[in-house]
Image (cartoon, rainbow, N blue to C red; front, side):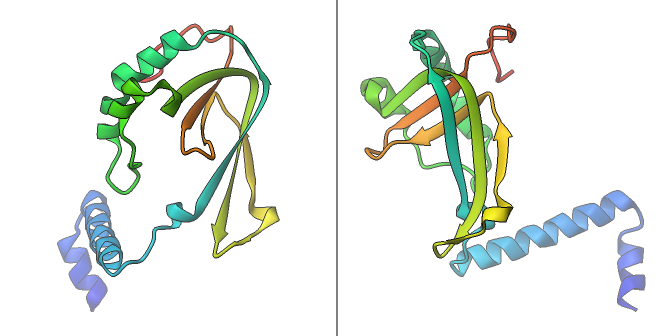
Length: 154
């Protein structure tokens, strides 16, 4: 009976998908209001870099700072980090860009200080963000001479 009413309301696949995502959004907002954390809040990213290069990254840092507000605006509110890019302009040590030869990111879920070794995902990457103990941000970028496109966010 419920399925027949649902079929009448959602006669096409796109209507059914829209209906599903609308209700998923309402449920996630309901649980967020109650204080539930998202699964992404428990995903740990570990940046492994090898071969730090002395190549000057000042141009790339300036390029990123010019576009960071656009990037943060495009992120939805549940994924948006609490960062203040205006303080990066005033205090260069708060945001640094460094080049390296090889870069890998390991991701795993950690919940209440319990993590599973089998569930770790290790991937090669072109860039990765690392927070230092002083809460400063370091953007590690793999130096790839074959990559000629300078603007990654177009």
